[in-house]
Length: 298
Image (tube, rainbow, N blue to C red; front, top):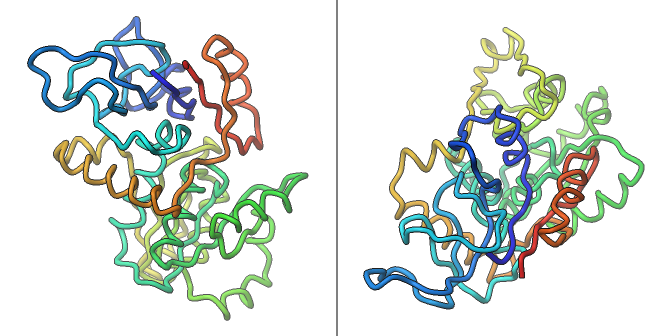
């Protein structure tokens, strides 16, 4: 193994409250990148020196060395930046599928999302920009709001707003210059998701892929009846179960193409040696952290 990030789903899995739980004892870590050192005589899909990522969650990437079947890994170009390779198989895949699978969006269409500084949020901003989509990005207010705004805009975000700004009556004027979003991406729940729904275009879809507020999504009856809004959920593990390994590899190679063209970068990261995993775990669970912790093994 070369490097592996700490994602919220990794923490949830350790806590025992995720939709996919490994048999114990288990090694943590659902994604990362490794380099093949040696292969068995019947292996044809990978060779020594190749960079590989997990084909499925639950592989256990927080370790220095491991033996896997060739079906358990996917080869990727070895000239990718290390942080991009280590964070390739979860957040960017989720972002790409949510942008592609729920609404038939065209260049110039608008997407609104909360938790915009998360790993998925940063990937949504960049992939949307590459597709010619406009984004409204909602984040919690914080002391370094302007610094965060500047970073997200450097990734391609058109607008960055706080939760409080989104609730103001003046937002009506804001949407005079913007097409109402047809797609909302919700990783928070609670009041934040209710605000996203309020600004969705009639017939639009809100996709929920996380619940950081640990509160339910509440939609008013009038929104469902008079605006015909659709509420959907997305879980990458389920998407992969419903499709072939070849389709997931095609998705990975599409994202590798975006990375190689400079249209997709890794989220803001802090590299931490594996032996300091406790420090990295503590840092990953702090509020308002915009830097993903990446365990490095080399």
